[in-house]
Image (tube, rainbow over all chains, first blue to last red):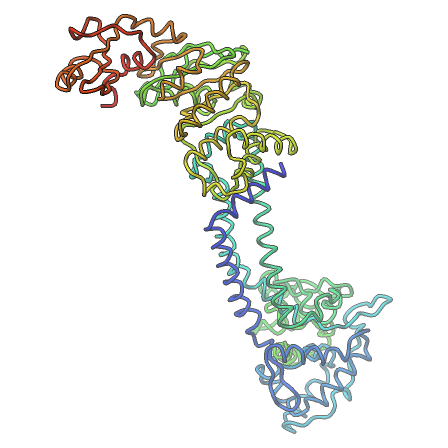
Length: 348
Length: 289
């Protein structure tokens, strides 16, 4: 059987149309890489001195900032991050809270800090920022939300590490999956069709059909070869994307712990389309009972029922994956939630 | 071993391609003669189980070949009249591929392929891609693949097409030796191929088996009806228009015409012993014109 499968492959790759299609696929892959992975706002970096980096330099900058906090992700680490952020970007705070185009390029290490800023002080921070324009007090003065507010931590602390570029890659790769799938499917169809129609188009059918396995195992061999070809081709395209991305942005973060990723961003471990969190410690996330949140969308907890709005989005989770999942939202007033939600959106 | 065709019939719509063919094949070489469209290829395809008969059946040792399936095909070798190759395969690749389909183990297949390539004179070309082969080389490769599994039943449809005279002689000798204890069914237009090696001859005409027997027995039908006439060119034209002319050749300033006729066709005509080609012309004179 293995010999038969090998020969089926030999037949497939003996066709110029298959080789040509593969070459076109590689070309299209690079176009898609360029369009989806190398050409995105996430590959820009906004530096404290106001300059903007892009592409590889931007990613490397993000990596260097994140590298400072690599290791145990504790309250102390968060405090350092907030402190550094306040020091590095004080002039941009106002713009940052109001201008998404600015903070979209902030170092990724700072993107999730709003999760740890106490919302009860947010109005104060916000007013001060608005009043002073560009200068604010260090954010750490307002105190921070402990990690324990988010989840019951295990014995070992979460590990922080840079993963944004690869996260971006995977999101980008799977995002245009439909785009790359079409040419991949065309190549698969071309190759597989030659495997199945070759005997007739090349007039070898009379030879094949009079052999012992020509009417039986050969069909199985063709099916297996086709399946293998499709799998290998998908693997090839994926590997191609990985290699290209790795060469462009380096390997840092490719093996980041998945749990850490979950721990960093509340919104990211909200299942797609549903706002409640499934992570440990979020048993307080219940389905919205307000009757106003869209179907399937959850509220952070029952108390949100009170806030579920005439303008429904403030208290409803999951309407947009950008919204943060702060477990302590239940303590806020409707107004605060509205502001924090807006801010979270901006930070994301 | 006995292969029996029992009222084998193949019909395409209203056209009857083969009409109730009865035949018994035992080890030996069988020559199948017939004009274009006589049904030779259809008959061979039915024997090879590529086509299913409309009625009747073919049996090997008493069992229907369709029901025997893989067991039957394991004993079969087939060279079709028209067939193709995978152009990017080398000769060895192709034989190894066919060997895998025939269920031969790898080591045996390699040895057998190498031996057959030598037998058919393609040893030097074994590593070359088939797309570089001439028609004759492809035909020899086709013969080699048919022999890979040492088939008990070897079906050859126009096997010498594209072979040069030397290769034809070599092929005939090989088949003669091979057919001593195997069933070899050979279909060809080249009467001399059959004449030289067939133990028994079957003549197919318009889908029916019109004659079956040894060469001597079937040509005896026209014994006394074959004449040679030494005539002028004008007289030769007259004979061609009047009788079935098997052959004509120039000798000095005259033309020697070989004629089939129940009666003496020309005053100087002399009777000659009939040959298979005369019988072929007797049956198929005028067909295809």
